[in-house]
Length: 522
Image (cartoon, rainbow, N blue to C red):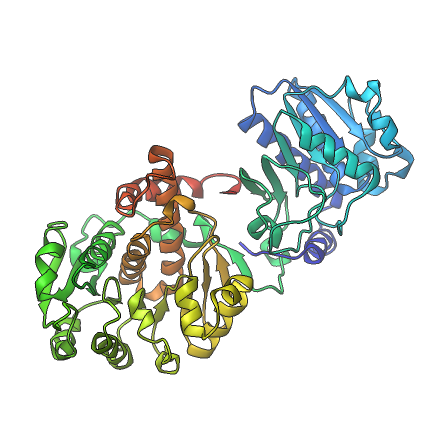
């Protein structure tokens, strides 16, 4: 799903009406109806609903929601923060259809009056004051109304965006911004919906009638949704066999870090690969083999430090034959000769490669040797690994995650999966996707190894749709974490819990495809 700027969203609405013949009044009707449907579905018990409306189109959406909720038997009170004579166009038309009298508030003093104060107790509030066309800061009456919403004890739903927010921001918002327990927006997300932490609850994106051709974005930035990769979740043919779903070879492990390679191998199987083999130093093989019986193992020559020896190169060349994808790095260590082996393997192999952990650190100071031109090379750094590859500080990465990832992807012809809050997937031409699944409970050792195995497995199963395979793996990885958070909480979550959560993640993803709204948490 494309992410558009506030200006582009206005252009989308105009194009929908002018080029595709959908009246703007219909768009507003559909938007307000979507808000009402959300309330009726997710806040069915709310009896009394107070809606704060501004004088623009955001207020018009609020008027429609008020009418629709009134028709469903809700006790609705509209508070209009303007004189009705100030309403124009579609907003004025929708105000004229209100089935209940609005309380008109002209000044901050009136907002504090008993007439307004006595109308405020509610089970639910809708914030339809300011939409994505607003440029902060907010002041005066609107700022005071936002303060009333922020002090409310009942939930607040933002219509389109929390009032006072800068829709184009990609960092946490400053200044006066309305609290939002959830957001219902329309057609496409704006940058702030994805990156600005506008709510701790869900954000819903409702289609209101704009065709895909009308949605044009200069950002080359998208939100990963299940609909993007839905065909990859289709049921398997009855005549399937393990050979149909690829063979992942994980190259990793070392003394003290055997579990990383074992988790990568098992996650490849849980994500659907037909076969998974872990090639690991001889002394740690028993640990890897004992992790799960379905994971096959191969013994490799090792250094005195218990890492893979450079002498393993010929054995690995032989093992790579007949494999679908190589996953290099989990638990492999930063031992110098092992790092040299990693660089050799990556440079000489034409198979798809997923490179992670110390496999990435092997290229610190050698980033020029990391090149995916003419093949599929996926790297999965966390910010520290990205900083080492890009020869900058972690602070530089975090300050411009998208810019750093795009620059590296373009220069090295690789797909970059930059992990963190809103993990980014960037392909070599700079097109980028932000992932909205996952939670802080996944900030624990080993979750990256699980992701590595999942990406390799999805590519092994869908080699002709490699980008979609990466998007699917990233999204499902976070979704598995979200599933397990509901059971274990954030503090107790460990990496192997994601293996337990993957079946439910796949199933909930399939169900999401059939839902009317696109939705994400936080």
